[in-house]
Image 1: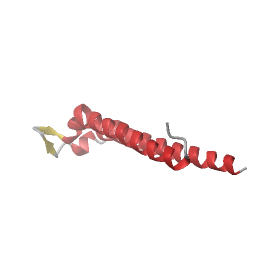
Image 2 (image 1 turned 45 degrees about the vertical axis):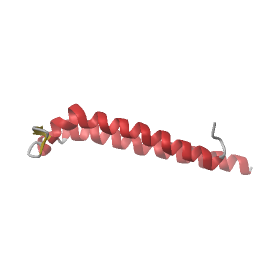
Image 3 (image 1 turned 180 degrees about the vertical axis):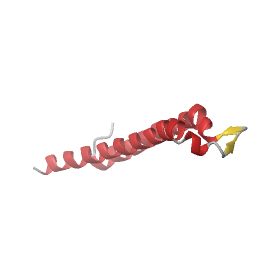
Image 4 (image 1 turned 120 degrees about the horizontal axis):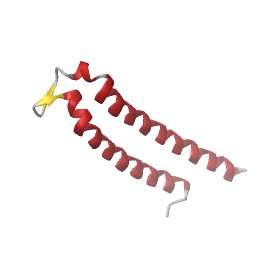
Length: 85
């Protein structure tokens, strides 16, 4: 019974990390790059507006940061629940 509750806690934390990562991904790619681009057009970054920057380069950098965050956080979660490699 205790093992089942530990598994449930592990997967609940895992799904929460995935959900947070997906929300950040959607906000950056669709939100900043497409939907909010006209609002961000007045802010200059590297010779272009912020919306264009997010659509071309910023989203890629955020995606890379999300990959490293997910790997780091899952390693930490695995160690907390005793399922590390």
